[in-house]
Image (tube, rainbow, N blue to C red; front, side):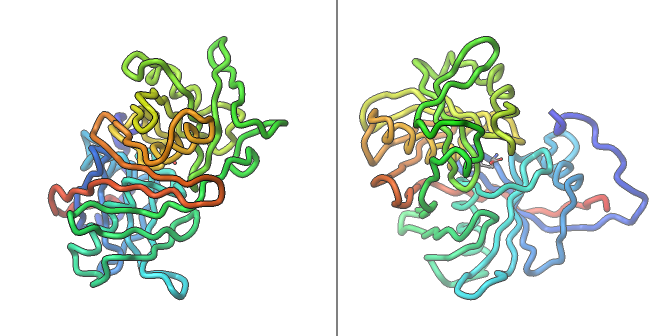
Length: 293
Ligand SMILES: N[C@@H](CCC[C@H](N)C(=O)O)C(=O)O
């Protein structure tokens, strides 16, 4: 993984110091940066530096909080994977984003509308400190995931390492390939996850989800994330898995999703309706770091 390679010397320009907050949602961890009160325009190399667990701070994703660019919206937030790629959506990140803007007094609101690369989402801080996010309606049409297929079937064969997996391609703003496995503990997440992530039928790469059905209201889930590797939890992955399970007739809303980092609650009432995700968001520490230019 690029994040474990030594960080190359980026340039001879003077370093730039930024303040950040380290946060996590179920162990999916973030460097969150206020780009409203300090000037920040990250390069991909700087994002990789921040994400690096040995040479930088260490995180799965970097979240940048900015002023909105359109009316009727409170903030814009941008998401970078550990490999420096900018992505459309992040569920655990959305919850941490809310906790961050409330704790930093960037808003008085508990219910916020925020622009992301894939549209507007609406997170709400609950009385118990958890955050509920309206993640919008899932997309199952292959071309819009994007997934290359000549059929619109819900369950599609995907050739991986000499065998056909039965996957469902779902977009939650970002692309997911979800499959059902007997046991997530023994599923080939580390070996086949990276192959699925870069499968040629997913032209934008994909997050690879491995879901075990526990009962009609509970699943266990592991996700090999595009651009970050396996994380302890993936919020959009949990939404995509629940949509897949409900659409396949295997589970019913609401669903308790067990990840390696803890539990999420996901509700979905069916096609055309938004997926609602509820879970924790935790601030770990505030600090500052010099970014090489
Ligand atoms: N951890 C996130 C998803 C982050 C983006 C993902 N790796 C992608 O490339 O789409 C979540 O909680 O949803």
